[in-house]
Length: 413
Image 1: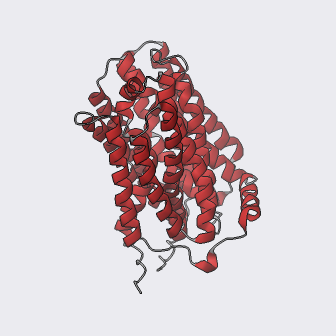
Image 2: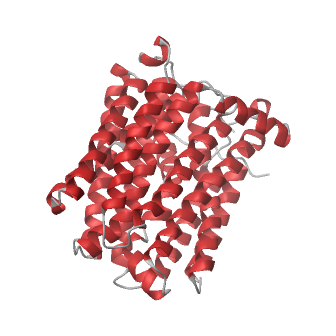
Image 3: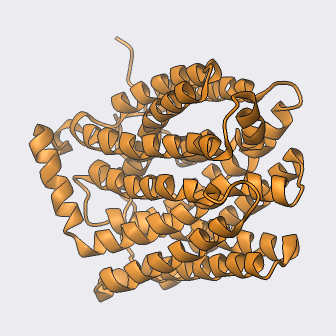
């Protein structure tokens, strides 16, 4: 009988979980340079092309709501492997889609499959770490996962020189296959059977009801979700705003997109360095506030017609704030829910991707020749996130101060 994989070393675990956490940007960012050409190829308007981002986000949101509770009941490893296999298959189906409607359906299923990697990666971190240690680990995941929004559009732009948008989905299928092989051979189970939470649908709904009634959890989750939605609006609108309005080439767009992703990585590592001194709550508040400044800057740049000189720095500030918001919001939201980390992670991810899915199409409501809708949404959402954080999440001193909980002992399968 073959031995089960042993738990990876810290460095390799960071790389693998970071790659699993990157399914969102991989699924949405790699084909962004080909979004306008895809719309032309399928004879679809800009809003329909942007809807392929929305359906992916809806799948990523709804899939987490399924995979998270299942991983609490069945363990982390098996649901993860099934999700990775399904992602590989549906990526190939996206590559073969003959029209926009089938592509939308395949993108939805692809998102559902990819959600398993995102939600289970967060749950695995909570299985192993808590407090400041968890915040630092999540920041490390963003360092690794942050390569995805940098490399994905660059790779997508390069692939367009040798293939079309369909070839990009074939590459996504290949990435899914590599991650499936890595998880199968190297990733151990981190949730032992005695610690699993079963009970079926009724018990799952009871867990979700308890999470929604937790004001701290809700405040942290909504502040992160609304900030993420502002970034989703940028992801959806920027290909048309920068390429169609400002005349940026697909390749230069990929470079600009990558620079903003570098900002996410820099912010996440600044948070990792400072969280031990100031605590996750302070770093989260700072991140959301930075997002507000960037979003308002985008709106001022568009209204005052400042061109790329005003728009690009504002986009950089707004997008970079996500690197500070997401790791600290995850550490805070999951801190008090160790036995239901999968379900809590699912609601956290659901809020992010559902709000992102609702916000993304708003960037294109005025057509592909105006940036004002994108700017309004990007200015409004971080403000709403800051309000949720300040009004709902009024933590005790224990949540404000740096948490000194030691890393949990890594479990062997």
